[in-house]
Image (cartoon, rainbow, N blue to C red; front, side, top):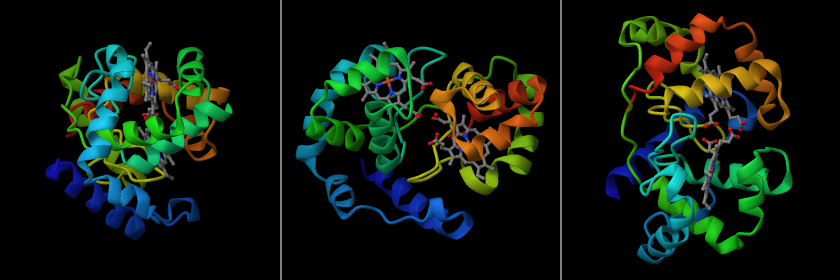
Length: 208
Ligand code: HEC
Ligand code: HEC
């Protein structure tokens, strides 16, 4: 728990230094900040998160290649995505329905629980592509997602994500499919080749 909190505090500082877009301004909600070290929020969050374990794993480390880890994400980012599923800005046939039936308090506590868990880095399916992926990451992604890939409140943590999820998400940004239509990522992804995406996915999953 202490480890995750240090990572979280580090992200907040980091993003405000490197990210110049106004969307990246980090004002961490004091309620979130307080709850991150509250044993009650963690306990309630871990109970509520049992609904999610089949897919996202008991500790937020996903059990499937196409499903994202939630462990170690910034709690503000998780809450924003949960809201986006609830109000239709982000769409997924399963997630959208599930989130709508959750109570506000459970949504909040789950985000606190997952943000406090540690990500396990993945194994690259094609280790030979890791070096190329690292180079591309440093050129194209680091300025926003950070050296470590930890992101922040408005930017996803991508370090350790399963390669299948990275490939799928980048493909959706390229095509501007609604459920992943983020204007910033759309323009980033548009000029990537399929071979770039594969290299990036092999590298990003190893980041921890
Ligand atoms: C049946 C499998 C399944 C279950 C159960 C499930 N999810 Fe998901 N979840 C997914 C998939 C698939 C995605 C990726 C959707 C997309 O690409 O938009 C996702 C995405 C997410 C994201 C966005 C993550 C990111 O990196 O942007 C959050 C947050 C999330 N789920 C929270 C939850 C919570 C909280 C629960 C439990 C209440 C839950 N999920 C249960 C399959 C599931
Ligand atoms: C200009 C800033 C910026 C750059 C550069 C950038 N990203 Fe992003 N990225 C974002 C933001 C902001 C989000 C969150 C978007 C959202 O909420 O839908 C994001 C989201 C993502 C996601 C979805 C994560 C999830 O959990 O759903 C992936 C995958 C991703 N980026 C990969 C990359 C890769 C790979 C690169 C380099 C090729 C890159 N990004 C470069 C800003 C950036």
